[in-house]
Image (cartoon, rainbow, N blue to C red):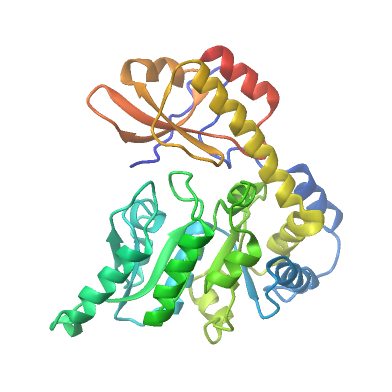
Length: 352
């Protein structure tokens, strides 16, 4: 499974390679501009950060939620995992999970091994996790091994799939039984929340120990909102963040953007728009006879294409290589986002 991007080759390009290929939602830029000359304290002690914390507490129905704003997904995953684990512990994750594949060993760089489990459509399940934990502690040599100290999942996953509330409940119960935290990577959570009948923010907060609401892929210039839900934020967490080189002096850059994203529930409008564009994309692909690699209900769509067609497509459409399907076929990803327009969809239809 990969994520190499086919680059522009000149001329007008349609951008479906990811959900962060444009700058920022106009409402986000407007918020940054309108607050530009406000005098605000630094390092996350500004009034907007305090407001964002209250917004998150209300949206998650989690009055004890502790919120920290960081700049990007890999940075967030590394800091959360490093600060929550003991030096001898690792983190359980799907073999396709972002921390397992496209973070350049960022987790291992801090001394924590990623302990991979085979995925099913990007997900792992409670039975797998329980079996791993049982086998680990039944091993007479486990004191010589990397302890499983956390479970990491992505929602949506790297394949655009979602966990059901029942699946999250089962994972949460296993984690509770073994007293290890459940960490949900929400880099694309805004697009998952827009799917009908998917777990809402309150459910996610109730069933996870830590999650984050991604902004980078949801119309912000940058930013991820980390939420500790069980009075479990590591001691002196801001100091840990600074040790990782991740504490912005101008914390306002993140807090102003998140305030705008959460105010009047702009994130819901953004997610719904992307899903409407994705539904049109699915219909176009079906009508034109393309084969789907799997069924994704979110803004990421995966199709199997003949290798001979890829070069022609890449001349006009930016897409993501995902993985080789066989000798003659490749799985590619087409993604919609807050910035996808009807004109983009119509133009793509004429090219496919």
